[in-house]
Length: 450
Image (cartoon, rainbow, N blue to C red):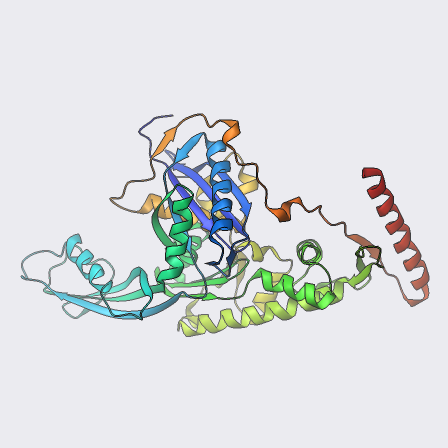
């Protein structure tokens, strides 16, 4: 590998997982994935770091896995930021230039953008992004790119993203303690949008909905311009908690039920099937019907969808979204979720995958909605003008350097879920007999393994 080659690294710090990705752009303009690491996140809740030590360990583990796979050592990375503390505002700014006879330059536009970082905001907050929406040159509206035009007064409408300084500093501190410099903090829904949305979708109008573990991020585009961003403090974890409380089972069982047997539409759930969860310490097993499980999931997802639709209406673009809604994030993989969103919103819905812009030997593994933010962060890094990409020092990473510490949750054996068909009331006794026969086989297997 060329020692002078520029490499971009990205770190997605989420509520349920932390992903580190290393990539480079090939001659075809595609992002080639050199290495990636995916570890469980235990120190983050709803996008906000609550435990520094646990988050640092998880970041180190994810980065080390990516470095080992790529054979590179990274020093800088683009990092995502989200959380319920994120808010956005609209603002207009202007500058008066010295002369009519000189063309508007990139420096003039950048001076106008830099001036937006000086607007007054609440104590304890900082501006994360200043996103121009449209420019006005001497009262000529609707200008998308004023560079090269003549005019004295340059105005612009801006979409400004604001977050808590403490939350941003905690993210930077965790990444720095992992031995990596934060190149830039990027709002996660904007990064995800870059990974899964096409330019045509952004032009005709589209709403990106990134359903993560702790938050649901929304980004609305129209006419190729970002119109609205929002972070809803609910995600896949609240669905798991609802299943845990509604069925009185352990959280790890609830998560597996949601992923393997859950459905966002109760009408589509099979009525003649139940799942049996082994009891704790010799207690009798719990039976949970597919129908009841789907009702629990649908109730919570309807609440999340209602808040998503509220944010879409708040953008003022609900009637202009010709491309409808694009779902991404780990929560988007929930069965029948697209149909539920389409039914509740009346919009076209599709699943967003980052396959349009990436190239990898492990395409099936990384081409998943849960990695959309990480790939979007890579695209942000490559697209950033006049900024040096993450320098990589090619080297062979020794095996003993690889972190072998696993999260406690990973050490818990995967629970066994037994599927038992239910025919009718007359055959109820036969069903229970089959259930306990299956349980007997389950415990015989456990005894042999022990």
